[in-house]
Each structure stands twice: as structure tokens, then as C-alpha cells.
Image (cartoon, rainbow, N blue to C red):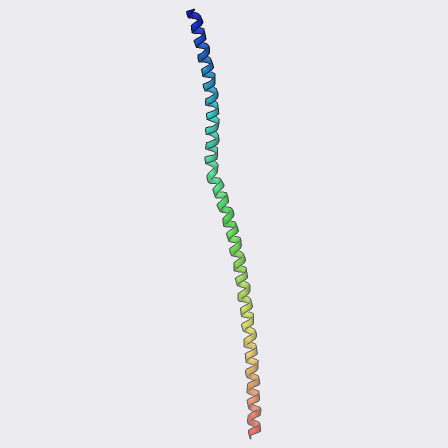
Length: 104
């Protein structure tokens, strides 16, 4: 009877050990998964930030190109206006000469 009780206790302990081993394995796997996730989280955030940085740089490049185009257009317009003003001043000078000639 004592032998039977010892065998029953051993069987229960074996079953308990098997359950604990399964639980331990499951917890180990979960711990490993969490560790991998914790390790990859900074990398994922880094990739997100790099993507945002690239998008921001592209937007900045576009804005810079637009600004350069506006400046070029403004310079072209200024040159055209200066040419026009020079032409009008020359015409004005000629008209003054003609007016002086008529007054004489």
C-alpha cells in the first residue's frame, strides 16, 4: 500500500513536472518573442523616422526648387523691366532733343 501511494505520488509529481515544463517552455517562448520585439522596436521607430526624414527632405527640395524658380522668374522680370526703362529713357531723351529742336 505504501508502495502504491509512493507510485501515485511519483506519477502526480511526473505529471506536475510535465505541466511545469510545458508552462516553462511557453513562457520561455513568450519571453523570447517579447525580447525580439523589444529589440526590433527601436529599429522600427528608426525606420519610421528615417522615412519621415526622407519625406521631409523631399518636400524641402521641392520647396527649394519652387523658390529658385520664383527667384529666377523675378530676376527675369527685373531684367525685362530695366530694359524697358532704359528703352523709355532713350526714347524720352530723343523726344526732348526733338522738342528742343522745335523750340529753336
